[in-house]
Amino acid sequence: MPRTLYLVAYDISDPRRLGRVCRSLKGYRVQGQKSVPEIWVTPAALDPRMKPRCMGQARTFSASHFCIT
Image (cartoon, rainbow, N blue to C red; front, side):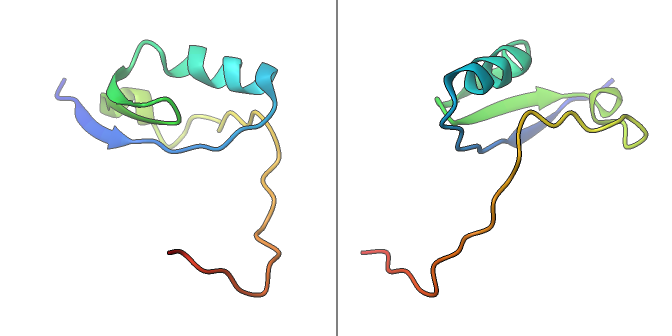
């Protein structure tokens, strides 16, 4: 089965959750920085019928504006 390269990005401050995410990606990871790994996966690994694994709660960006310099 052919594999596809994906770029995954996450920002997790809780050390326990960060460890769980790193361990779950370990088998797929090929390169990248700590929180932005490149992973190779097969279509079976990304089956849309699979239940999503949520390891925390996302929060929306609450600032009215921001600047990147």
